[in-house]
Structure formats: C-alpha cells, structure tokens
Image 1 (cartoon, rainbow, N blue to C red):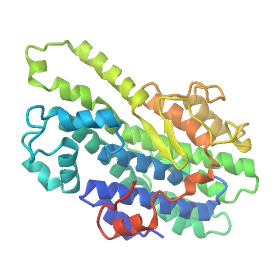
Image 2 (cartoon, helix red, strand yellow; image 1 turned 30 degrees about the vertical axis):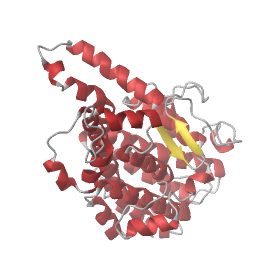
Image 3 (cartoon, one colour; image 1 turned 90 degrees about the vertical axis):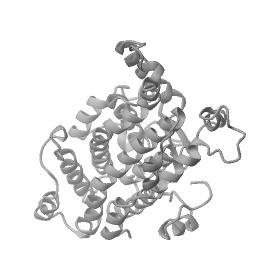
Length: 367
C-alpha cells in the first residue's frame, strides 16, 4: 500500500515525466485501497483518476500524436537545417528539460512548435501535480483511518473531515470534498445496492467537480497554447495585425478543433473521444441498473445541474473542453455509465514498468 511518505516524495519530484507516471500508479494503489474499504462493485474517484492521469501523461510527453502531425512537428521548427546530424527535434529536446527542469534555463532558441508543446506539457503537468497534492493524502487517510471502522462513527467522521477547509471552492474552500467523503463513508455502511451505488456516484462527482474547478486555468492554458504562441510571434505583434476579437474567435475555434480531433481519455478497453458521445462499457446498457432511476436527492440535484442530456448518452460529446460546463457534462455521464466497469480496477502499468519507476527511471514499453 502507498505510504504518506511516498506521496510526499512524488509531489516533490522534479522529473515531470516520471512524476506523472508515479502519480498514475499511486492513484491505482489508492483505487485498490478504496475498493477494499467500499467494495469492488462500484468504481471510486481514484479509479477514474488513474486513467485520467495516464492520459495526462500522453499530453505531457506528446507520444500519442497522429503520425503525420508528429512528423510535421519534428520538421517545422528547422526547415533549413533538418538534414544536420546535430539537429535535435522539438519533442526530443522538450523531454530533456521535462526530466531535468534546470536545463530549461539554458534554452534560448525555442521555436514556435516547441513553445506550443512546452506550454501544453507544463500546463498539464502542473494541473496533474496540483490535484494529486490536494487529494492523495485525504484518500490515503480515508483508507487507513475511516476504512478501519466496523460501525458508523459520526465522531470519527467529523475528526477526519476537520482536515478540510470549510467554504466554497471559489474562496479556496473544500465543501465539495467534505460532502464527498461523507458520502463515501455513508456508502461503506449501506446494505441496499442501489443506495450504495448512488452514494458512491455522488461522492465521485463531487470530487470530480472540485478537481475540474481546480484544473480550469491549466486546461484553458493548454488548449490556448497554439493560438497564444502564434499571437506572440513578431509578425502578429506589428501594429496589432488582428483585433482582439479575432484572436478571441481564433482561440475558441482552436479549442473546439482540439477537443473534436485530438482529445481522448484512455481506459483499458481503448479510448473514449472527448468530442464524441460517451460510450458505455462494451455490452452494457447506458447506465448500470442501480443508476437508471436516481433516488438520491443530492445526486439528482447535481445531475440536473451538470448533465444536460436528459437521461441519455446522446449529446454528451464535449464541444469545447476548455469550458467547465462541457467537461462536467461529459464527466457526469462518463462516471455514471462506467460506475460499475470493473476494467477500471486494472493496473495502468505492467510490473516491470512499476519496478523501473520505483528505481527512479522512466521505463520502456508502451506507457
């Protein structure tokens, strides 16, 4: 089981590629711990976070780009010296200072493509680390403290919840987390399968909402990177070639294009495209039976606020992933439809890769 010391070590890791891999593996271990406490019938937020973090790793490393786009990126920043033996491709050089941030200080000639990739990597990495730093310890404490209770203990619950800051998230409060872990704890002692599934989904969505609000500036920055890099070019600066309204439109169109054509979340069964409707697990109905009719009043309130697809998976495709409303609409249906997808408990890496990470190096193979 993951320890508190290991969590702190991961948070402080300077190698951003390795840190992401360790975060992904840590979420998997927390997911397993939560399942030991709450059962394997329903996935928990850490189960989804495992594969969200694994997907974030692809964005940080840029190793899942379409072949033609990757080839274009390799050539774009050096049109006149691409045949030189000492030329370093943008993605290759990017990896050197993702693994060793001190090298970034020596970079003086970052091209447009490298600037775009760099901004995306840093934005995604910062968000990935920020959420882990805030949530890993509470999940660990839930497993090791509340997970030991054999009967419901309100005093023990309140002692656990005292670690959170009361108040709305817009004021840096953690009310959603207080409510989420209360629901997880209540679910632990529920005998009715439907009531438990709905309490679990409520908790998952509340943590997900807190996470997505925290991530908002980092997601927006990553998706704005291409237009921001172009706007920063000298040709674009001269006399303000384009008005601010044109850049705003270009930014929005760029975000929508990236959402539709490039963005996905990987799960054990394959990829779910964020710009397409949510697909339930293979062979499954749109929602598990326990989640078809929602009886939990707070869960119904949350779904009414964020799920705009009227009890179907039609219309769940995100138009612009930079918008919180689009993300939460997709996530609400993704969490609900995959709530009992046992595949999400699968490990994200093979044992030899985990051994490599724990030894301090980036392992080989498909990550």
